Image 1: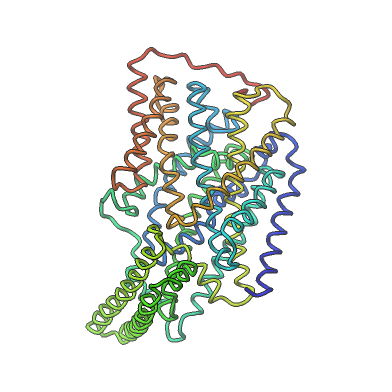
Image 2: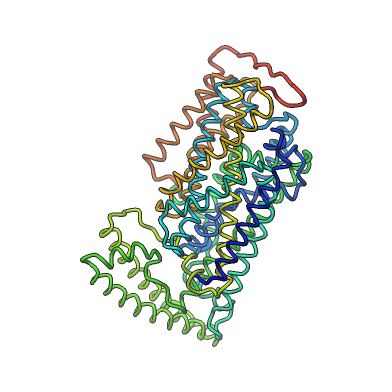
Length: 575
């Protein structure tokens, strides 16, 4: 990279860390540190909600998903607006009136301490793993650009984030999120503009999209009902609703974002901002991946996007096979490029028979390119022994570092940094909050001054940052990162959602029923994940259903339990 690109990245990092650290003056009390004294405007809380979810995985993994699979992933978000509306009229006012720090405090109020502890532990495990994946995504691009050791790149991203989150608390998280969302959107829009400008002069944007459509990249909706397919209309509109209800309603990393808003109404508005903005933004990011695919129809792409694995094969006794495949790939690319141009010319001529013939020829040429690349991927797996090899995460970083002009490379990488830091900061802050409120203050030291809990919160933030970095080292090679993070969450979310459905929707439910229902739900999801081919999106529905069914059955077959009392001190729950 050019020195100017490094300056852009350096200025961004210094600016965002400084902005986070200066928020320490608002974080001298536990309420200010964890909830910003419930003082944020709705738009800031809403952007923080979006930034916590819109990680670098979105920029790297989703663009790679769009390149390889087209627009189908957008179906994953079809249930989001429905879930946000439901939560805005149920959970948001409920948590505000309860004046809780964490979602899991209510489970003790409704059931008992062991149910609260189990829910908090499930959150801590799932979110720490997901936070590791979030840090791994930008580590991928830095390992390419710098040639650094993966451990070094993970620490270079995770540790600065942990520092400003430790000292600034949720104030630092929220206000840096606002700025980072601006950088992210600017980076995505810049990439789209440059991709369009990078097309051949005689290929318009409309032509490019028609070519992408011929390759199946613009098919956004699949109405087939197949439980083993990840992205269909039904998995998004049914299973996706359960996932989004669980994530935004039961996951502390999201609950804490809208609990910082100034009022119940502003908390609702912060969620509805995501309901209306997230799907269009996600569509734009997927379209970026599709445009990268179109760009590489006319500019030859690498046969393998992961240069490290390619170098290992080139240094092996099977280097000759790799060279032969590279020649075959170049010939196949040339044929596909000519077919894409012919398809464009046929459509402009308006000859229906010629259009169909040219489209068929293009699809055949595209299949030949994919087949050659597939053989190269198999060669990598055989030589390296990495059976999980998948270079989809390297597609967008490769485009950025090899095709963009000086200065703009730095801007896009800064956007990836922004996405990683905003999401991981929110996760670390939420992990520390649940650790201190649900575990430490509840079971270790029940009475202590705010200053003590503040110190413990900062220490917990740092420790969770180290934990996330450790997991990130292993997550970078786990396949499509956008799928990895959602698969991890789906193992846990259904169980958490089921507990809250029991708490809010069934008056007869008991603590014993909720506790054993959660254990049964989590065990069932693990069995389903290990023994069936059902898409991970349906795990959330399965987990919720089992928790509710088992919880209700145990509650109704046993004696009724009195609800534990909760003392109110200073307008907040005393745990």
